[in-house]
Image (cartoon, rainbow, N blue to C red; front, top):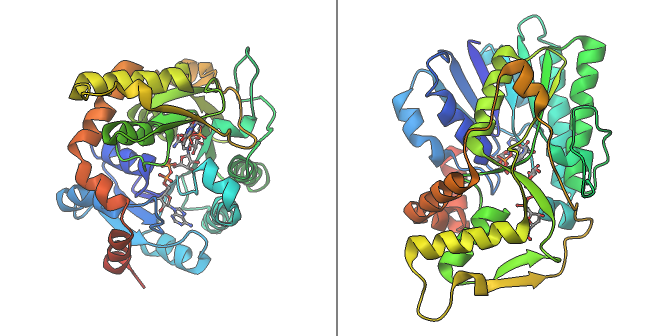
Length: 351
Ligand code: NAD
Ligand code: DAU
């Protein structure tokens, strides 16, 4: 792996993956991070990496929906490996406004696949990052395996399902050396504060209401982001071409239990304010339309075949995440600010 193209490396998981990889002694190649810099992408997350590895890290602002620019990047940097994170990723936004989800998640993935297919002799691996949401909702029992039929509920999960099918079709039809991973809910540093965990942490710190959808009994399987990064790294190095790997944290929690845990951890970290404990901020609100009830991953395949295991217990992961948001209030202020976004766009605009 000499020239690794990362798409969406300025987002939550992409940022953590790039940071993770530069800490791995067996990664010696160059990384080209291509990101459009939507509201969810922040190249400043990687400023220190850029300084530490000036010959091995390159950032290019580009839209994966622009095939000409993408093809130029593949040729200019002689890309041999692709790790595809870029996506519109937030379910609630996909319900209000699905257009960008269709464009980026489906058309953007198709563009990458076509460009990769036309350079197949140079390409060693195309890894596609996907989600457990493609499988739809579980009842009280059972787990998603790699052979569970797809039944996506939201425009987001339908667009990811579509991209997964395209990636597999490019393997079957054109023999493109693909791998896929379908992962459960990630949490950790650099997550945009629209997703459940950072939103609850910040609202709790700011004494704002904590909006829990429906009855709060929907279940998600939580995975600390570094554990997702280690799974992707295993698959990139040792995963079998054409194969899909489910990745999960063995950590099913009802939303309400998780939110209460966050409240208590913040009370402990910062002290209860004079009036009320954070749990009293919990407010049940109207449910998300099409809200999947339960997700749970069976990760036996990646554990048995690649020896991967999730390592971070939820208590430890939540505590580190709270600490990170406490220590990085500047980051939070910036990513929430429209003026900062405009500044970023001007700084990083590339022809
Ligand atoms: P994110 O929203 O934090 O980051 C997405 C990144 O993609 C941003 O930097 C954004 O600027 C970039 N991007 C968006 N549209 C683009 C385009 N057209 N061209 C180039 N770049 C573009 O998302 P995330 O949570 O880091 O998720 C990364 C990937 O992992 C996604 O494919 C998502 O479906 C998948 N995933 C996420 C989770 C999770 O819990 N967050 C779980 C499983 C799988
Ligand atoms: O399962 C993997 C998926 O996890 C990823 O593919 C998605 O990119 C990622 O966004 C995440 O999707 P979810 O919809 O599960 O994550 P979210 O953080 O939006 O919500 C988690 C749960 O919390 C879900 O049941 C909805 C609920 N929720 C969410 C928010 C934002 C609330 O109750 N209140 C909230 O304010």
